Amino acid sequence: MIKVGVLGATGMVGQRFIELLDKHPNFEISALTASSKSAGKKYEDATTWYLEGSMPESVKDVVVSETDPNVLDGDVEILFSSLPTELAKVVEPKFGENFIVASNASAMRMVDDVPLIIPEVNPEFLDLVEIQQKNRGWDGFIVTNPNCSTIALTLTLKPIHDNYNINRVYVSTMQAVSGAGYNGVPSMAIVDNLVPFIDGEEEKMESETLHLLGTIDGGQVKYADFNLSASCNRVAVLDGHTESVFIELDEDIDILDVKNKMSNFKGLPQRLDLFSAPKNPVIVTEEKNRPQPRMDRNTEGGMSVTVGRLRRDNSFNNSFKYTLVGHNTIRGAAGTSILNAELIVKKLL
Ligand SMILES: NC(=O)c1ccc[n+]([C@@H]2O[C@H](COP(=O)([O-])OP(=O)(O)OC[C@H]3O[C@@H](n4cnc5c(N)ncnc54)[C@H](OP(=O)(O)O)[C@@H]3O)[C@@H](O)[C@H]2O)c1
Image (cartoon, rainbow, N blue to C red; front, side, top):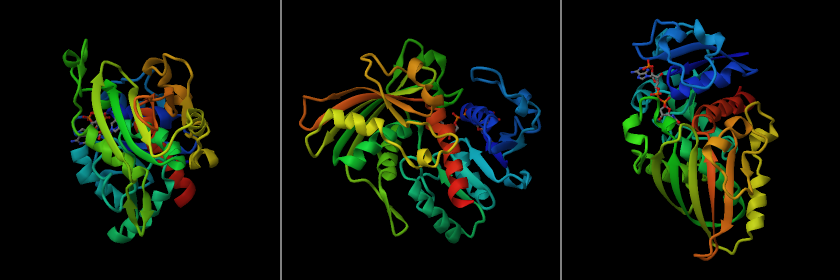
């Protein structure tokens, strides 16, 4: 067993980490951190459990530590970070000196020598780890995963990008409230409502997607060469982001071939049979009123993205459109971080 810790363990994503790690065959939780208001308390006293089911017994008595590299147990090898961005910017590099940090926070995603990875999409970006350690003289390193809406979108774009020339992508999102953290969206703002603004989300989707679908050339990321425009909305759904996607290719399309390419898509985690890898990262449904967040977010343990309403877009040349649903705190956050760590264990340790 590899000893792991969770930074920001009491929050929305931190709790998902705990839920997923509790059942993990290779990772054992041995450190949990949060803010000074939680530090020194037992996890069960510091945390209001937000997820379905009860808090795992194994963490109830663990004493929450300050989020400080100097107080962390030296036995821990991998740290999963679900810290607020501003804090992550300051502390993740300190943890990276000695630990492997698999982060959800956006703070380090676009730093040149820090890999931004979805294991099925661009596992080769792990090559940046060697450059990072050399640049910084660290024993540890930082690997990041993209934001929740980007992960779901990019998993569906990967089989298209690998097989066709994409000209442009438009995406409009309907994002769950859990994506903003427990205290993120007041109920008075979202019940009976929709908020057509999520700070920074459109910019993240537009840059992270092209980064992930890019290539590594001489230690530098070369972005994918197509246009992407995102419009992001917060809706009154608890978990599961829905996205309407419109794609124009350079060439004519065979919609059945697009469907097959998506359904048959497998990445390195599937070939390596990693524990958290879904059998199919993308599942295409034919049902005319699906996917729906309540019904499809937990497909393959929340690790698959469900695509439906895949159809030719007759309003434009060479175009098609679809709707997707992905679980934002599992596939969109903790689950992908854990899959990144499984890939790291397989390829680098
Ligand atoms: N929610 C999602 O779907 C999602 C998806 C992808 C990425 N992310 C990213 O993941 C990160 C966490 O998001 P979240 O939704 O889990 O947020 P959250 O529910 O607000 O949780 C924040 C966590 O950070 C801790 N924290 C806050 N201030 C701290 C401080 N000054 N020092 C140490 N710890 C502190 C909190 O501990 P206390 O309980 O002690 O305050 C809590 O454990 C963010 O960077 C977010 O952008 C979230």
